[in-house]
Image 1 (cartoon, one colour):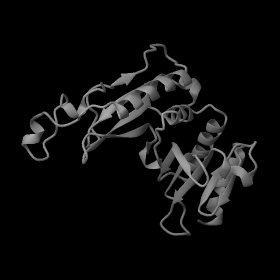
Image 2 (cartoon, helix red, strand yellow):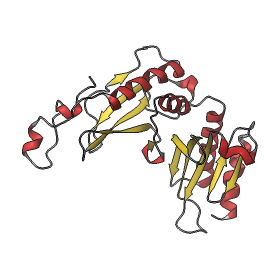
Image 3 (cartoon, helix red, strand yellow):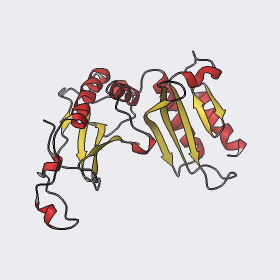
Length: 240
């Protein structure tokens, strides 16, 4: 990565008062109370980039959170920012704002991911979309769908004081949503307490992942190769 591009990224974090340093092929972001040489021993953020060659400006960047779970292992809590094909300064500023909100405890993404981690539910940067988080859900041994999480305004990385209540949607193996959301916050007010809402959300996701239900197909799709399953197919059933 060219020094000029690296400088742009580090400058964006410095402008947001976010401690960050270059470490081999990534940038490490950490809390100001943690010394740089101890950053890996505490929950921290990592920013990665993608360029066609070492001298090209990055085409995309992503920012995700990790926490230590025993030396030398880390658990990826999830991503909180991703952007591509934008000017580098815009991507850097967006990542810096997301990191500042995370470190200040204002990140809805951090609140939700921390609640999920209490149930040993983790994701990685590939499960992240700027507007929602994906949780893989096995249908059978060879077929997977996923649960997606976003608030009612269709966001995942907003600040906690903007939180409108989580919704949980089920998607089939093609990524198509199955009917209406399978769960949403019961609070009908415009704004919802993100911590309390995330605790309830995590318990529902855990139920989906651990409920001992069989998801074998019982619709007409089993009679025709590659036919889409009915929305009422057993593989999409709610947890017991």
